[in-house]
Length: 339
Image 1 (cartoon, rainbow, N blue to C red):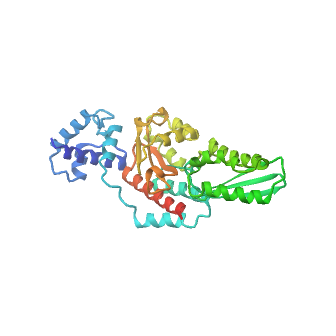
Image 2: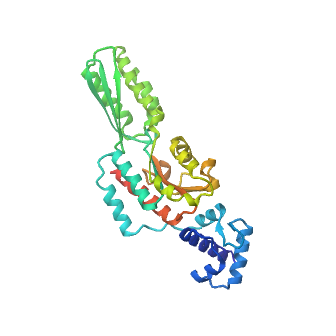
Image 3: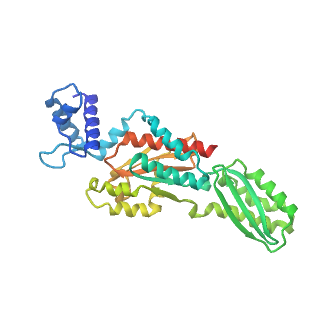
């Protein structure tokens, strides 16, 4: 039996099942696909695919459906992610092109991804630990109160208040601002922590308390768990796919509500341009009947990404189309943040 032909049969079964939601029989494969062999040969190929666990028969006398293992082989055989249509590319440009700020970009991105894929879309906010600094500003609010403004290369802005026990000195603030920007500008914030800790010693003892307070505020900001957050859209799409789950979708919805579950899952995904987790490959039991397609964004180099976006849906998913949409949106979002 030809391995290539067996793969052709599996591709046809996956494509038909995703499109129709009906188990696929040999007669349907002969009618819909030009496989170039007899129905008997196709039945033999299907029997072999079932023996190896790539397809299964849900009911006696029914056709076959892909298993998680079958979907994985199908996804792994996708040689190149197909490009989006011109209309889909225009939709991305129109919706994201005039976004006002980072929050607006993220909100628009997650809604767009849900519309393109008809799945639950998830976008992780750029993490401060993975971002580079564009500028640091120190703004006196009163004689003993200072506002520290952190502006990253993606446009993310964080503001922190610092209280002092001595009156603020404009000259010292100017020097501190300059030194901070020399240390951190253009570098990842997590990489500058040692230099921030050493910074107070570069000032006179009378001003070290202020410098230490500002440096501590910056390092504390990096440790905040709240910076790791996600935005979702399209949960109604999952509800409409209820019949694709053998059990209730309640565990999946509960997992989506627990953002820590998705954040942990994102952290476990491979540092690839496109990563796919299928059904039982997900360690969380609640997602054992779901698939997740994600991509890093924020850099041309996958390992340098500042966040991850993706979609979640049932294993009966249009993998080529979903992978194309996720990749295209991630690349466009990366260009927006870079500009």
